[in-house]
Length: 543
Image (cartoon, rainbow, N blue to C red):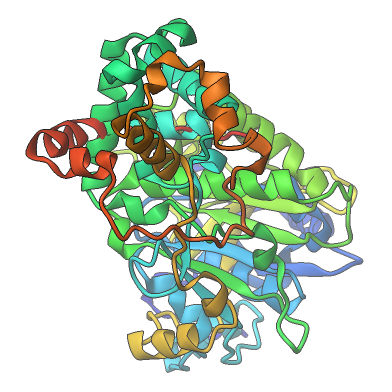
């Protein structure tokens, strides 16, 4: 007997014939049931809806197929976040670490047990879910310490020119010029750790002392370098400088297990940067690329080493260059062999480039709305990406209730499962955000806080160039010394401290250097302000 549901989950009356909404005939129901049968460990997603929920027909995804990536899509308010939460909870319970960005703070509820209610228990009973409250082990992170969480930082060098170009909104010519600037810094032993390092290199190249070096780069005009400097200065002035520096996050810290063997859920708290979409979306891509570069090849595993959830994925691709998208496609295609699965969360499949969409084996599609001609076109395109079924998906996708989805995944054999109209399970964690004081206590108790909590300022390009300017002011004309000899006078490039996770040396600044005096002057501040607006779009430079 089906228990009465709350309003959002009221069993559908049998629709009239010809609507394309079902019901499926007995043979089709049996095919769905067989298609989602799993011999190994699987994540339970919900129950088939066929006029009403059928608790005996469970829809699930084999955990071994989660490194084939996936998509969670749907209009605002249709249940995407709750679908994400049930995946997080079950992955953690099965010993798989998870990384996810928490845009609005509501995902933090996974750290607290849920609260039972009459409606909740009625809904879960109707889909065959034996609901029990449960909390998952969570590590909270924040970008550069903005917000609650262990700070995550990256060095400018590891971020690379391609990602910086995307953040700064540079065109193709400016992006190529920025790549040459990175090459110049690397060739001349000028480690780029934070934004002031990149700013110092650009200011040096556009100064009279760096005129010949700028000309030697080839293809980098003073005007282009000035534009990059201006964009970089504006970017830094917005407060983004706190995201770059050391200690840099070690991606292996996302692969940890709790003492009881459950996977730790790493939540990146982002409410403080929600108005800087290019910043956080590109930073997420950098984290994914960092995982790709640091993890060994492992092939197909019984369960992933990590599942990475990429929320608001459309922001990653808005205005992205062809080269940037190619890098994303390559990373998504190859990271499977590193044991990492990636789920993109967005409103419509059309938000994801086709080359990326083609890599996503599992689809959880919540309701789509068709209020405009563009919406109707997107609805038709989304329907065409599913296997043939007994539904007319263009009709079904607009009729799904909150907490319902059209699902197809990869079976244990790797074949697509039948399309299934599914009433999703309820999360066992809280559906409300975890209290700020609880998050603060968890961050204070984190073993990672001692490792990443205090920023470190190593000797890098800023200090090296300031030293050169001081020597020049003391009578040494560095413009007359070849660049190679200048670098040699401060030791070979290999001896210079380069950006790395192990760099801890700080530089005393008891006196203001010539460069600091220039940067501190009114003219210098004007130049700096004009320089920083553009560095945030540069993608991924492999280390």
